[in-house]
Image (cartoon, rainbow, N blue to C red; front, side, top):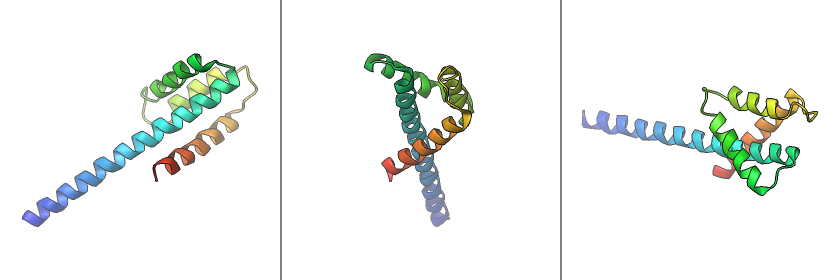
Length: 102
């Protein structure tokens, strides 16, 4: 029974670690997205910091990435950036964020 408990704790630790890593990757991706959109919008450094925080907070509205996508899409609606471009950037920045932690 002791070995079973040890194994259970090991799986729980791995799960917690994996979830923490997912959160960190998503936050880093959102930071990169915020920087990219800030450049498109011509924000100065202070406004860029505020915008990055707004993108990160947008990710807490619902599970998944659609909340962030909708925010960015709305913010870039007057800047000739297609939905495909936004989704591609999200994917690219997700890969970049993963590589930051591996």
